[in-house]
Image (cartoon, rainbow, N blue to C red; front, top):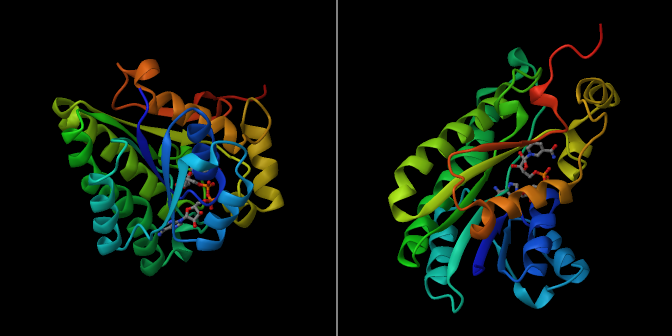
Length: 251
Ligand SMILES: NC(=O)c1ccc[n+]([C@@H]2O[C@H](COP(=O)([O-])OP(=O)(O)OC[C@H]3O[C@@H](n4cnc5c(N)ncnc54)[C@H](O)[C@@H]3O)[C@@H](O)[C@H]2O)c1
């Protein structure tokens, strides 16, 4: 069963690949991002199903904008049945160099933004008979990766929020899951990964490569699709080339 799906962080990387995949699979997609130029590029370049994509300029830290989006979704001709919270920001800063300001900014977008979008749209899904919410966690929300004090802690919070929401929204027939990507070749990574970081990922990921946004989008589409994942809720699906499963990598 398809319907309308809201995707945040839709202008780039994993969010954008998810919009294209879902639109091609028959979903009506509301593609939300704070980057208008990126949204314009999405519409100009999307490979198929462009007519099914509506773009919305939205900052996930702006409560009024979120309320406006919810009003719009309440009146949507095609009922809203899914939300993908892909908007997020990263950082590669050691503990002693991480500032309180940076910690707050990253939490505000990655945790509070995810919470606020979900809280605004879940009641509409409940009225529509249920749905699926997918959060973006990270392997850095599961493992103690160097330099991820702010980012990793924010994603750890997303992991726990996923489980709590899954329990609390089960009676509303809303499933809540998260994906935990490893290193994925997106604009975020181009900004934050140094050559040394890249070398370390190639050493520690059993599949010995970065993933693609499309590979993560496929996992998100699985979690969104009621026909494929109707009995899956409260889970964090690692899409990480085996990184979180690995231990000794050479003897
Ligand atoms: N790329 C990776 O290796 C990786 C790994 C683990 C987790 N993730 C997570 O996946 C998600 C997507 O990451 P990506 O790599 O595609 O990043 P990206 O930078 O390519 O895309 C992120 C998008 O989010 C948007 N965004 C940021 N702050 C926003 C805000 N306040 N309001 C609205 N939109 C906002 C940006 O404009 C951008 O379009 C993020 O939550 C990220 O933390 C990515």
